Image 1: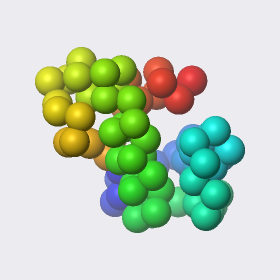
Image 2 (image 1 turned 135 degrees about the vertical axis):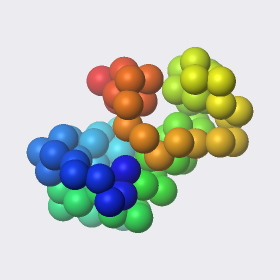
Image 3 (image 1 turned 120 degrees about the vertical axis):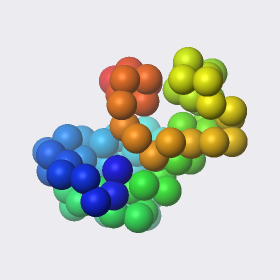
Length: 76
């Protein structure tokens, strides 16, 4: 999430995944959890709401921007 102390290596891995596997072609792989990365995570979460959002009680149109348990599981 933006403004948190994110591990740059983990952010790079996330950005690579989003770019290569989820077709976020314009996403920069720079290790910074910036607004573009945040937006891509939100879209990713809304693509797979049953796997990512529903377990937390969120609606499909309410992304969290957090890359936590269910989002990490889907990425991995």
